[in-house]
Image (cartoon, rainbow, N blue to C red):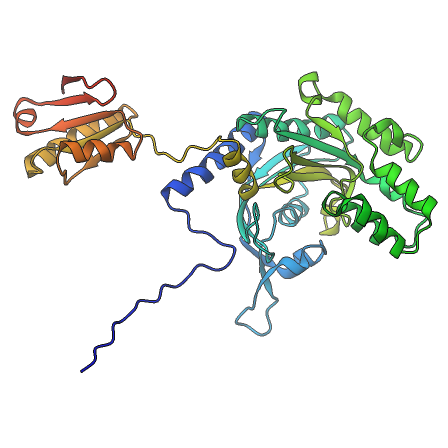
Length: 417
């Protein structure tokens, strides 16, 4: 008789999602902690919303409609729902339905989002995303400058320096005004967005395919290759003055991170003023963050006229950058690693008492309830980056003390309860 070996088939995770084992979650936790810490420093308040929304909410934003995970409701008469691909439309809906909320209001959220796009380095289908927004009813360029400072401080808080990143800024008005005369405006904008990726030669050939004349191509190249905001004065003076004021508001130590780049193309459907992206200077990754000024989003969802500026930042690309720069440590930090010598009930009961007293003092204590000998446990303690071991034996139980062993200098002492 032939006995067939049964093989367990593991159910795999969905493409573009991830399992966060403890060592992986440490990386994510570092990023989430930085985000929350810096936003709190600026006085921004945290909010959240549903993980699924009516699909119509996202259709208003247009450009993300091809990246949505749509849920078919069991009720045939019901609308479709979508797992949130981002947070801005939810925020706009929330503000629209609560017009009594006093402005300006400064908000941030850190939801899990999902987008149906091709997974690649720095990009997954499921991710955490920081969303930071200032909403206001009266013009105040300082609120826009503050958003830039907050974005810069998040990158600095992680350990990144001026050598590692820059914040590239532009204004929606520049390209809109310059390209107004072209029937192929949308196609040209799309090509400008890809300029760094495809290079000047392919960019020029693509413009020729659009039937543009050599002089027109030369003018477009001159514009997008400029790194001086003063070159924009004659193209759209209003946009020039707005962007210049936002930059001039910045304290000196922040200005060094800001670069003017007219090639920045973001949110054609809703950004109306300043637009910006955070970039890795080594150019090994896509944009780290991106955002801009919007004037009509809340109104589009039935609310009053409310202006806003904000940005989004995914955790995956940020974590990749921090790993490349050696700024991530995937180690738990435990204050004390506790073992019992014989694993008797008396020793285990006493170890719980000792652990309780230490935890009351704010210490992190790992208790191994089934110790396998001193040498093995010293090695195990290293998995927790722990430098101090507590030993509980028969003598410790009888005399109400524990032995504290310093694993660095090989010393030990007796501590009475």
